[in-house]
Image 1 (cartoon, rainbow, N blue to C red):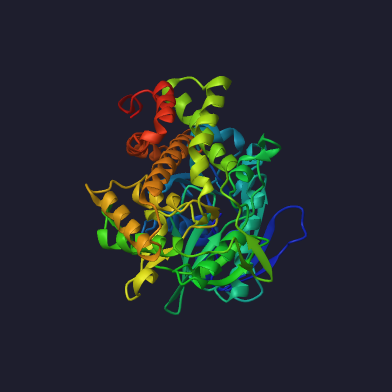
Image 2 (image 1 turned 135 degrees about the vertical axis):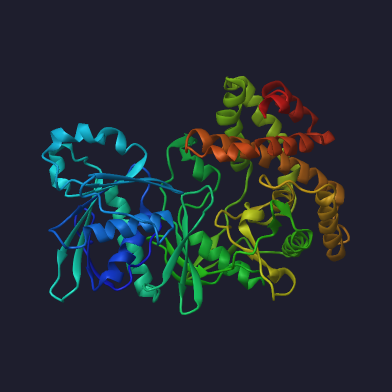
Length: 520
C-alpha cells in the first residue's frame, strides 16, 4: 500500500490494538478530500470500503472525492446513488461501484440490484453498510464518520478487517513517518513501480520534491534448497537496509544515487532525493549519448578497487557474493516457469542436473576473475538523465538494493541487452567497444577476449533468468504485459549462446527450448 498524509488531519493511531485501527480528526472539507485521495491510492480491485455514520457527516462527500481521485478527474460528475442505489464508474485503474443502501429494505433485496455481480473485480464503496446484515464480507475497510467538537470538523475512524488490517496499518504508519520527516502536508503522486512489491510516491511541498519508498521487510519465503528460500539463495534484499547502504556508498564514490532524507529501516519507509523523470530512452529507443554516459559510469566503477562492505549508519553492510549457487538459482527459473509454459513439460532431474553442471562449468572462469559492485538491475527503467550535471553524475541510479560482489560484465550486458528495449543496429557493439577502450586506458592488461566471454556467459544467464521471471509474473502475479518482451529476450539468449565457449550449453537449450520462433 503506497501511503502519505491527509492534509489538515491529526491522527491518534491505535498501535497497541490487535485490530488495525486509525482515528483522525478532519478539520475541514479539504482534509476529508485529502483522506479520500490517500485511501484511493491504497485500494485494489476487489476491495470493499464501508462508509458509516449519521446523515450529513460527509459519507457521500468522501465517496465522491475518492471516485474522482481514483479516476484522476477532479471534474468527474459523481452523483449520489440515493435513488438508484448503485452507481458504477469505469476508470483507467478499474471499475468502482458506489452503493447507497439507505432505502434498502433488507439483504433479501440485494439480488434485485445485481449485487453479486456488481463487485466482481471492482472497488466497492457502500454507504449504510448495516443494511447488508450477514451479507457483509469479513474482509473490508470500515470508515465511520462523526461530528467533531469544532464546527465543520469531522472525526473519521478507520478499521481494517481481515486482509485489510495489515494494509490499513501500513497506511497509518506511513503517515506517521511522513509527519515525523516534515512531509506530512505534501501533495502526493503515485509512481509506477517495478516488478517487485515496492511502491513509490512523488511528494511535493513548497516547490521541493522527494520520493517516498514503501519497501516493507519481507520474509525469506518457502525453502527451496539447502534450507534456504529463493530470496536467500539469489541474494535478494529482504529489507531497506541494503538500499540505504549502497546509496550512501555510490554517492561516496561520486555517482548519482539518491540522498536519503529520512528512513525507518524497521518499517521499511524511506524518503529519498527525487532524481527526476528524464529517461535514457525516447519512444522506446535508446538515446545514444545517454547510453554512452551510462556505459562510462560502469567503466569508471569497474576500474576501481571497491571494498566488499560499506557503512550503514552505525553498522557496516557487507555486499553478498554473487556466487555459483545464486546464479544457478536464477537459472532454475527457466526450468520452473518458462520451459513448462512453452514446451508443456518440466525438465526431469537428469536434464536439470546436466543443466546445472554445464552452467557451473561456464561460470567458473567468470567468477574466478576480479569482482566488483554489481548493481544487477542496471538498465533503462532504473536510470534517469540529469541535465546540468557533468560526466557520470548525469546518470541517476534508482534500483540497486540487490547489489552484490559480482562480475563486471553483468551490469554491462544488463544495460546493452535491456529486456525492454530494442537496441539500434550497431549501438550495442559501439557501446561495448567504448567500455573496453575505457577499461584499457586505465589498465592496459585488461583482456577484451576474456571480457567478451564473460559478457556472452552472463548475457545468456541473465536472459535465462528473465524468461522465467516474465512467465512467472504473468502466470503467478497476473502481469501478462511482460510476455511482450519474451521474443527480444529469446533473441538475446540465442546471440549469447552463439559464443564458441558456450557450445555445449547451447545444445542443452536447443533440446529443451526448441526454436525461438515457436516460443514467440
